[in-house]
Image 1 (cartoon, rainbow, N blue to C red):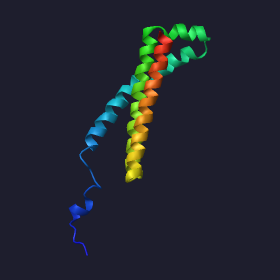
Image 2 (image 1 turned 45 degrees about the vertical axis):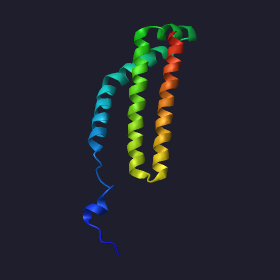
Image 3 (image 1 turned 30 degrees about the horizontal axis):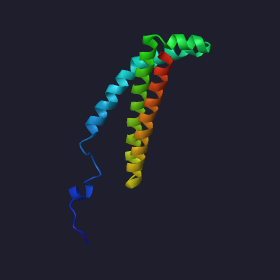
Length: 123
């Protein structure tokens, strides 16, 4: 029979001093998304109906390219952090660690591919 204190039973199950950091990261990315998402929608919408040459000329300008790059980075990182939180809540053990690594790798791959595509359009 094991004699465990309440604290010993709860260790590893409660707050691990990372909740505040995660809260602030999500708060900052949410605040950054307030102006970024409407700018993304207008920028993407303007380039949506044009021909290939018109879209190429539009995204060759610095302002639309910068707006798209910032939107891409902020939105994907926000979704990545939220996915990490969901994995930490519902998946445990080695599966959780592998899932977090997979989500992180996929997120940074998406950011890299998106920025590469933007650079190819802009140059």
